[in-house]
Length: 477
Image (cartoon, rainbow, N blue to C red):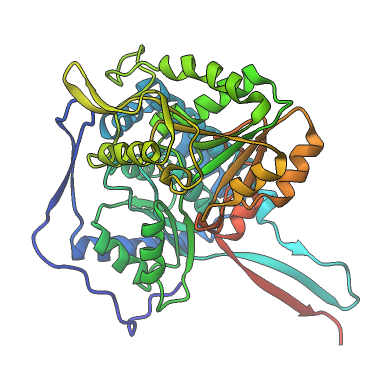
């Protein structure tokens, strides 16, 4: 953790301070313009973070919990401002943005509740003449790189556990939602703890990679695409820095022949279309037992048609615009590919605008989608529900595992033993029974295969933000 003057620092691009502009996905107007940190700003930020890390590690866990509690109070005092910022930057309906603030607060509180027990030393069984325990040491400076789709939830997974564990945090948020990092920094500044415990800055992708390589950074937590994960990993290749990667999914659901149809359809459709499908754990492909197939399609169609596109600031809107300018074209390509391979569009499937505004994509239901379709193999990240029939549990299992991604999977059945049997074979970080697109902070959030590595949340999440230190004292000779 010490500042070594002999180290070789990463060089950042010099030049005048530039700015980064974000458009409003509904109006097309400028939603935000933020300065891009120059070399001097980055250097000062990282040096301040080192100093903060030395200060916060000296606090007891109880004192860190109290600090985080004060910061949450400061954050929640600005719920409406934060929600408005989310909506104007990425198009999430305002009611859902407010819900994200509340969901973030729930995760924040849970990690505070379990911090003292989770971070306590592990005391080994007594051995005469010796004291043996395992201490959990903070890493130092954590660079948090959250995603834009849930800009608070993907950030809080790292920020709060890192501080509770005794680390300082630098948040470099997504280019789509740069304002959200500042809300975390401001909340901790208002909380009155060690200065610069949490800081925020904005830089481009290339400079982010240079920060990953900087020796003043002790850990990196990234949420984003598989391509982004590879770039972060490559940036860290010359260092033994801790790197956590949450890289999304192509999450399947299996509807067994004994599923409660009404509840299943309602939850699966919501799990696919909520937040315009822009979720790493959204349901993207559904395998329905042949005996339930036509009934599932018939029940899903009116629900998918029922989504209301429009101004995300209106309480009537349930499906907001697509956040990224280029993504509507990509979603259209997914639909074209599926149709070319034999799938049928039940409803939706097209890009559109509302009163001449916004980059929207209709809520879409596809049926008879072959396993070779790209939507069954890649993360679409849009409001598309692709459905295919299967003849058995074994066929469903094989198709669900037929993916390079492995974040979450869900099994819809009344038979707990069936769900348990499938869960043992499913190659995913989380397996649900009769729910989906959800996160319980008491459980670890993790992925397999190309969905990344590492763990956030739960007691296990603290292990990613600390290092074990063996305490081996001989008390008697």
